[in-house]
Length: 145
Length: 411
Image 1 (tube, chains in turn brown, purple):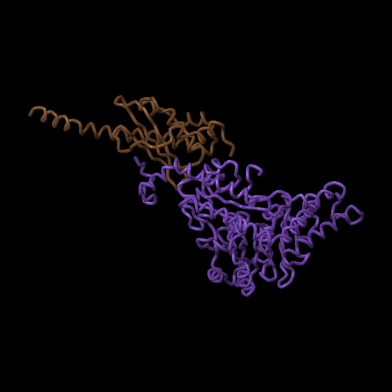
Image 2 (cartoon, each protein chain N blue to C red):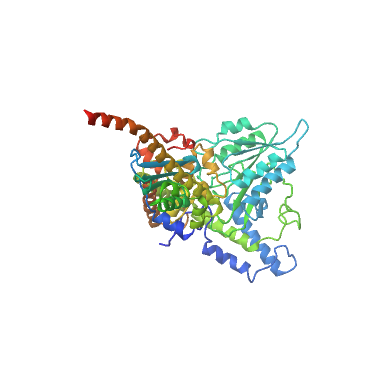
C-alpha cells in the first residue's frame, strides 16, 4: 500500500509517543481496539485545572495509519480544552492524512481514543470532586482545633 | 547489495537470464504456432514445446504425454479438480461418487474451487491441520469413504512452508482407489518430486516460482495405473490432447522447460544453502528478540521459507519500519479483507499473533549479507515498535493480555 507522505512522516517521526502516569488524577487514559483486530490505541491526556490539555501521549499497536492517526490526534489535542478536543472527528483525520477507505477504521479508533481519554479524565475529576467536601471538612475541623 | 532486499520468493521470482535467453528466439524469429503442421515455423515451435515437455516430465518422473500446459497453477488446480469431478462424479444411485477431500491451508485456487463445488451440491471435507500445519494421515484415512472420488492436498504450503506427507497420502489413496491431486507450486524445483514413488495422479505447478516466466504452468495427468480422464474445461481447437484448448504459449513453455531443468540441476546444493541461510535468519532473530514464534513445521518445511510471529507488534507496520526489506505478512492490513491469514488461523495461531507475522522466503539470489542485513532490520524494527506498543507495555507490567476485556472500553 502506498501511503501519503504525512502518514509516513508520522510513522517514522511519531509525535508524543510514550506514556503518562495513569494513576495521576489529572491524567485521563483511553485504551481502544483489540489485539485480535490488529489495532490497539492507548491515548493519554494531562489536563491543567482549567481542563486544558497540556500534554498528550500515545502508544499504538497497529498498522502505519493507526500509528499515524494516533500521533496526529495527540498533536491536535495538545493545548485544547477537553470540550474542544471532544469535537475532533475522524473525518478530519482522514482528510489530513489522506487515508484510503480501508484505513478509515484507524481514524475512527483515534477519535474513540480521544473520547475515551476525556471520559476517563472526567470520571476521575468527578470522583475527586465528590471526595473534595469531605477533605474540606477534615481540613476545616483540623483548622478549628 | 541491492536494496530493498528481496525475500518474497514464494510470491514470485525473477526470470533467470538463462531462461530469458532460451525464450527470446521464440518471441521473435521462431514465432510459429505449434499447431501449424505445414511449415517450418510451426515445426520449430512444436519441437521446442516437446523439448520443454520432456524437461518438465523428467523433473517429476512423468511421461511426456502426461504433461498438459496451462496458464499456471491456478488454472491447473481448477482443471484438475473440476475436470475429475465432472468426469467421475455421480450424485445419485447406490454407487454415487460425490465426495472430495481437501484441507484447510490449501491455496485459494484449491479452497475456492472446492467451495464452489460444495455450493453446486458436492460434498467436501476440509481436513484440519495440527499446530505445525500438517494433516493427520489417520484422519485422512477415516475421511475416505466409498463415495470419495478425489483427495486434493498440497505439497508445500506457500505461507508457512510446511510439507505435507505426500508419499503417505499417495499410498493411502492408491490403496483406497481414490484419485490424488497435489498442488506442488511451491515445492516443485525445491524438493524432489516423483509421481510414481509418491502415488500422485494429478499435479499442478507453475513456472514463475522457479525463475521462469509468469503466465505458464502445467498439470500432470497420469496415463497409467490408472489412466486419469478429465472433463474438458476449455473447449476449442483440441490442443494438449484435447485437455486444454488454446494456442500454445511457446516462449512461456520453453521458459518453463528451461527453468525446470535449471532448478533440478542445482536442487540439492541450493536446498542445503537455503536451509542454512533460512536457519541463520530465524536463529539470529530469535536469539536477539524474545516472544518470537515459528509458524510451520520445524523440520518438514520448504528449505527457503520461514514464517515468524512477533508478539505485541503488527505486521504491516513492521514491514513499513523495515522498508528496505521486501517480505510479506499475514496481517489483515496487508490484504483486501480485514481478516488475518486463514492459514495461520488454521494452525491455531491467535489472531493477534497472526497480525504480527512475517513470511521470509529466500531464493537463488539471496546472500548471507542480505540475510544479516534483514536480521538487523527486523530486530531494530521490532524493538522500536514494541516501545510504541501498548500491548508490550501492559505485558511488561504483568497484565495477562488474554484476560483483558477489550470490548468493554477500558479506561
